[in-house]
Image (cartoon, rainbow, N blue to C red; front, side, top):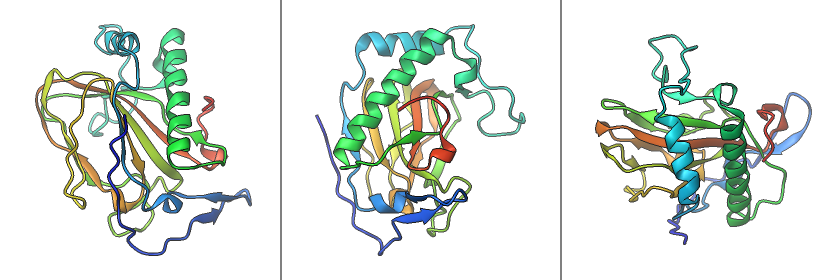
Length: 219
């Protein structure tokens, strides 16, 4: 099922840019005004359990290559640290997600992705409202190539950790196996409230129209 929330356009936005390689590609701004999508039961219960089992395993390799004071230190499992079987499953899920979102947003161009991660949110973790490719004022941030994101929720044994869209006055309910997706512009500022109890786990991805930022895993 889909639960779509319409978003008003902020202003007329340039839909394309020329990359350093000379290619003209779409940007997130071409998706401004598209609805936020919520899809229940996007992954199967077996898939959810497999991802969650690994995330909770003592052998899971949470990224410790970042500086210890980085907010994401020890909170992500990247493809390089995933067992091959798990990486294959996560890539399959990401391909399904990309196809679904492309259909929902009427995207016909090739899609690429720069991120494939399991993420954990522990007590005290939160995230201020932000956009994935822009500053709140619409200026590019350090990831201007990102067009949209998908988040798949793997559990509900936690308190807090709610996604919210403050500009829209929206805090959609989330359930295990649900996928949320939305464009990356400042129209879709979003944050995560503080986790107060338990650990929140997600399968998280960012997608782009720019092949120069492809992570090498097919979508």
